[in-house]
Amino acid sequence: MKKIFLLLIFSVFSVSISAQTDTFKLSLSGAMQCGLANRFDAKVNNLNIDISKNEFVKSKKSLLPDIFINGKVLYSGQVQPSIVSAGILGFTEPEKISLGMKNNTSLSLDFDYTIFKPGLYTDLEITSNNLELEKEKKNKSDIDIKVEIAEAYDIVVLKSLQYEIAKQNENRFKEYFKLAAGKYNNGTMLESDMLLSELDYKNATANTEKQKQNYLLSVQNLKYKINIPLQSVIILTDSLQSFTENNISADFNNQHVNRPEINMLSIQKSNFELQLKKAKQNYLPALSLIANYTQLFQGPGFEYNNSFYWAPVSYIGFKLSFPLTGYLKNTNTVEESKLKLSRSDMELKQKTIDVRYEMQEALTKLNNANQNLVTSKDNYTFSQKLYELKKQQYNTGSFSYENLLDTEKSLSNSEQEYILAVYNYFIAAIYYQKAAGRF
Image (cartoon, rainbow, N blue to C red):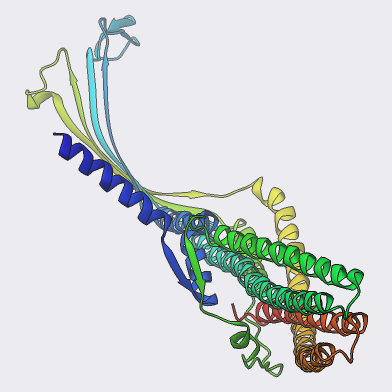
């Protein structure tokens, strides 16, 4: 028993360790798909579509006829007499005669089928349209989620770059300090310069730790955005080079823009058209087919097995309903639907103009960001070459530490410009993809 208990503890511990060390290898597209599969707000959107589908099926069932089975038992302890006038049935005076039965039982089948009802089939079209609208809402929400994840993913790549540059800076200042300490020991450098190099090295070490913390925070944020356990390990398979080498182009001759905002407005316009159609149909009468079949029992007691007391009663007919006061009430509904349709058409046209400008602006920003990235990367590479040259001069004693720091400032500026250019390119690429409807 003790062995079994220990085995269970070991199994639970193993599962716990396994859960803590789950590893996810994620490309940008993989992270987006993972987020859409894991996030609860994305699942809510799927449920909203299911609700709309259910509404559509429910509206289709409204076309079915109404069929009812009714049963009714009326039992009177005393049958109320009817007054028969004089001259009827040979009576010379008015008399009271009990003509009814104590037990009146009926079993009936009622049928009511709406042949035509104003707006009935239009309601079906409206629910179908609402389903398409819900799908577009989900599409827009999915795009927003993808943008969040893309930003978080790119920030991890950016923070990783900052961390790597900080480690390079730390190594440089470490090397400065070693050279300065050697010169100080040889008596060729003042103690103040040596201490300054030590302080710079310590500051670089602190900055490296800060950049590491920022990187780890960005990783945690990415895990949160795709809703995976924070203790899991993620490995990003897309690099800075893969992002910057993507060939992004645009075709502004294509008049169709696949953006959910435009699609939603287009569907809403169709909805207003259907509502106007329904409002105009409300002037029309409703026509129904009705039918009834009843078995009626009339007897003194409860002798239901006696066929003598049973008699069939049935009818079939049509019912036509005219909305007399509805004509006046419906006038404002028609006018309101026309105004909403006109407003929706204007909103759709304006949104189309806005989106096309947004695409053009986003592409311009992306091209500018790409150009700035190339320039800043060249400057950064050049500054590293310059640093190597100045370091050699400093090592041979032909270059003071203060002059080396001036070169270091230039290198640091080029690093910051390069990091900023990378960030701007990431953001520009994300929002161009969104503007062009490519998510």
